[in-house]
Structures are given as C-alpha cells and as structure tokens.
Image 1 (cartoon, rainbow, N blue to C red):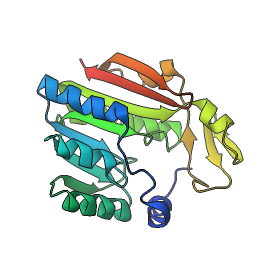
Image 2 (cartoon, rainbow, N blue to C red; image 1 turned 30 degrees about the vertical axis):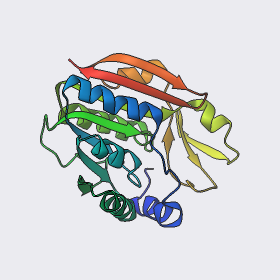
Image 3 (cartoon, rainbow, N blue to C red; image 1 turned 180 degrees about the horizontal axis):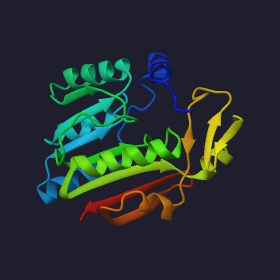
Length: 210
C-alpha cells in the first residue's frame, strides 16, 4: 500500500513552499563533507530544494531527486534565483535509483524514506548503499513513533509499525516508524557515526560506508 507519486505532486502544488530554510543539521552535514574533501551528494527526496540549494551554495556538486514535477520546478526556480546549478532528476525512490553504483560521496535524505511499507524502505536502503562510494557518508532523518502518536489525524496500522493517515495533508501516505536500533540496522554496509533525536519527533542518523 505505497503512495502514488501524484499524491506528492498534489501536496507540492498546494503547499510547495512550506519549508523555506535548511535544517541546521544539514548545514553542519554540508560543512563536514567539505572538510572531508567529499564533493558529490544526492539529495534524495529534495522537495522544494531547500537543502539542494544550500549545498550548491557551499560549492558541492549536488543532484536533487524527487517524484513530484512541481517539487523539481520549485527547486529549479530557486536555483535560478540564486544563480546556482544542480542536477535535477524526476524519479521514484521506490524503484532502482537512476544512478551508477558508487556515484556519490554522500546521500542526504530528510523525512523521506519512511514514506513506504517496510519492504519498500529496505529496498531504498539497499539502493542508497549501492550509489554511495566506500568511505562516503549518509545522513538520514525519519520521524519518531511519537510524531504519529501526537498527530491529531487518525491513522490506520497496515503492518507492524507502518501507519497510514486517514485524514489530513498526507492522507493515504504510508509512514513506517523505526526505533534507533532498527534504523541503524537497515544500512549494514555503513558504520554509524552519530544517531540523535532532534527535539522529540525526529531521529537523525549519520554513517560512513565501510
């Protein structure tokens, strides 16, 4: 019961500018890449481009990928206003990523990969592992279970720890929720270097490929 891309397209058509600023942790992630001499990064599920634009501003070679054409249009327009360049790719993370193996020094994905049933999330994790070079870094953020528990919308549990809102903006979109140990375990080719709870609703993992 995965969400159709058209649902995300509708969300971005209606509320595409909801996130105008990059997350502080992503800003720190970009600085860390530069300090390590890592330059190529995939922003998986780039949305309106807030992180793609920030990383391009820092001089990184960025590819932003999303399955919503409007999201990529917003990103392209933002890059244009800033006179920046980045690769933009329309594709769905639920299928094989359209990049060669070892294509990137890093992958960033904020509040994206959990939007699927567990089997699909695991497939996305394998693809992330495939496209990151040895010694490369990932930063993945997902919501904590508490985020669902505190959501005012009702949810249906369609499999263990996978919930689908029955109302609200993300109605029908699956949300698979991990514990910290479970999130770490889905990337066996990586060594976890940091795992933090940001506030009380978001979990952020950083790891390096062995």
